[in-house]
Amino acid sequence: MQLGISAGNADDKPVIMSGHQAAFWHMGITAKWLALHEAGECLGARTAWVVVDHDPEDFSALSVPVRDAAGTLRAERIEIAPVKVAESIRAGVPPCLVDPFDAELRLPASVKADQLSGFGPNLQLAKAALMQAKTTHRGHSAAMQVATAAAEMLGHAAGAGTRPGKLFPVTALHTTDLFVSLLNKVSESIHAAAACTAAYNLAIAAAPHSRMAPLVCKVATGRVELPLWHLDRATGIRKRVFFHTLGGLLPQVLAPRALLLTGMLRWAGCDLFIHGLGGGATVDAPTSPGEPLDDAGADAKTLGGYDRAAEAWFADWLGATLCPSVVVTATVRLELGAGEVATPRQAAQARWRAQRGRHDPSVLGDAAAAAQKARLVRAIAGAVPGSMERYGLFKDLQQFLAIYRESHLAQLAELTVAADRTAALAATSGIATDRTYSFVLHGEEGVRQLRERIAAEFAGG
Image (cartoon, rainbow, N blue to C red):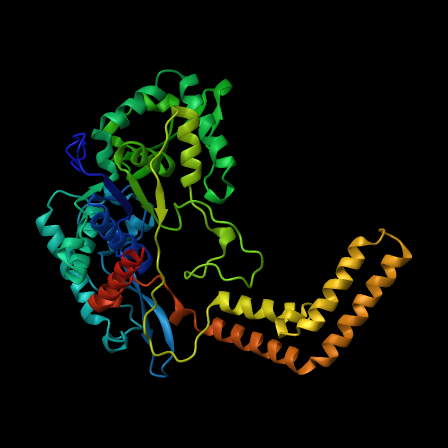
């Protein structure tokens, strides 16, 4: 393969791939990195990690929990890049257009070093890794500097052998024959471009949870948008690409958007792709807010990435079948000694249970009352709509529920008190329960423990 991942021989090993934006990721993304290694070991495969270096990602600071004199936790931004770099990134300049930088550790004026809850040494390690990456990879972008530093730290914590066989940026894809051939295909005519875009829009319309926006497709006015970015180094701006602007751009200043990127890699780059929650296939919504979903605490209705849309688009537009993909994530929280805490999802579950308990006797374990309610509900469903029989049965149900609530008054009150208490805890414990703190803060031991958890999952599977 042109990216140097495999030799391309018929008997060559399969390739497993994953990737993310350049950053010191949280442990959910770190889980993908570690699972990539475990999958490669189990399947005898080559591994590769794509650095999404053209996607604006603020790597210039780390969110760190600090404790004030009263013992109260709050999250503060600890800057790890110079002000100029931070301003560029926050202004939306793609990291691939930002030069490598001298790492810093700048604390806000309100934060003293002794308030960092012991994270100071880990932050110093991150700074040293960034400086080492700048020295050993001269000429690379800030994105690859950060990605290399993260790889170095994770390799040191989890073992050098856990590093992917290949680490490459999205902006290297312009050197591949596939990327060039797709550019040639959409540049043949405005109708060829429109065929690409129309299939793209149909695919994302059929996958609403992908959260992808449709592209402009107005052939009559000559405005057909393509799934590409123009990385303009002169202005530092990532621009949209249209058919009428494509002709004046060289491949090296172009990069694929998310759907085109995942489609290309799963079509011709690998045999299995590991996604996180953002890119992975849509999951079904739970039957009720109280039904557990995932360890990340997210609602299923917000989950589901662009994988299904990519599959449908490539099948429709190119007649291509993409390789399988899987989703890997993890929830790991810092041990902050914050006492009892609760997550927003736990608060929602407690509130749902308190409300549901007023209408569903099974919540309180009253099997006899639950059976009686079920009989009344079935009778109502079987009665003629608008009939006096149906009206009488409905009154019977309301009377039954009133008696049930009166007889279980104390238990229902306990559920309400518990819901209020959990909601109050969730409102004040967000800092302690945040799952998005960088792996840097978890330290080498935290990374090793996560690797052991993932290795155990593979061993059990």
